[in-house]
Length: 88
Image 1 (spheres, rainbow, N blue to C red):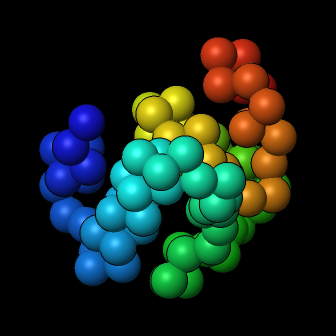
Image 2: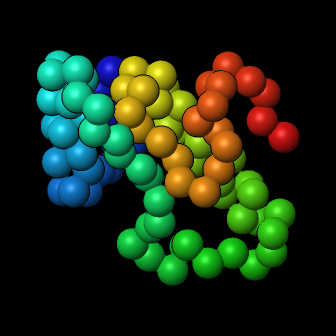
């Protein structure tokens, strides 16, 4: 899977994380990666439902990556336990 094809525009730190995920998988490392906050004010939400929507959108974006790299997790959620389970 090519991350650039998924996003069209990725930041420099993302390239580092992708490299670390690939290397950790190749080495069967127990190292865990947690996707958390953002680098912008988009992290703020106008309501709880808006925050839930953003988290769900981010999870749906990350889901293929989380399936490929089981050591990648979404912080502050229980979405990591069963990736095939319906959310909300």
